[in-house]
Image 1 (tube, rainbow, N blue to C red):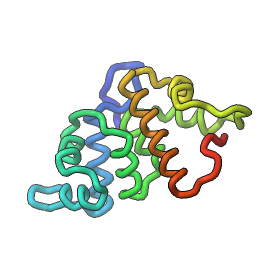
Image 2: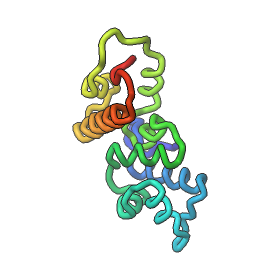
Image 3: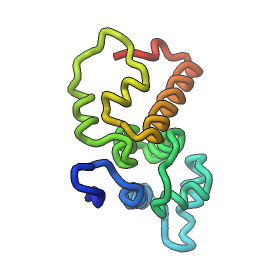
Length: 149
């Protein structure tokens, strides 16, 4: 994905996320032409409000964590890829995370955001919210320890 934001900032912009999302939807067979019905079908398939889908495709605003998770799930994409595309994480940060060794102590979502270089308060809140949602879902599904390495 080509970056259009300021030099030194390699996080995706809402416009870049919109372009990425359009490409992913079209690859998945959603017809985004006027009257194609793709936006409506994707909204129905993902459980995301039609208005939210429309706003994302216009590059307006940052999606909530549950929306990003729904996008990943519906399109069969890794959540990490969606987080990078949405500008929550950078590829460099994601790579650094993947290369880290195991932790000896659990990491809080706030500390993880800090280590990931997420400094924008809105993005920190989104990241924390996303991790809390994932923890709740894991607990509801009978998952074991939540804070594993």
